Length: 137
Image 1: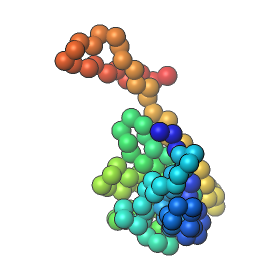
Image 2 (image 1 turned 180 degrees about the vertical axis):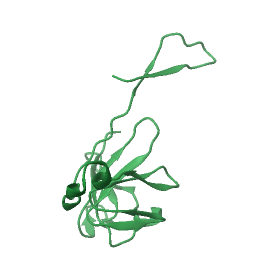
Image 3 (image 1 turned 90 degrees about the horizontal axis):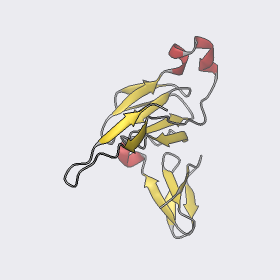
Image 4 (image 1 turned 45 degrees about the horizontal axis):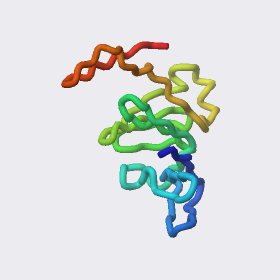
């Protein structure tokens, strides 16, 4: 089922009785709203607002950008950085000011996209074994 994911900058009441906080992601499937990602239940402090999100479709890792600098678990980050969550552990995925230049620290990353390798079947599968291959496009 395809969903549009949204993050709001303040706690928001949605139709159907769902209220999401600014650290959450809401999903809209065209007819109903759902809580796609509960930020506070996964360690995101209430003072942080999600302002960029994407998910690696291959391994499921979720990538976030936030509106301000902060700390999740033991990970310190700034608003221009990308933080990763694999379902149990937070890590700094991209330190923009260290990677690009210190001047980039003045920017606030507001959107992001994850690019991964393509996954395809190679056509040599047998009934009991599926073989998957990865290739860079």
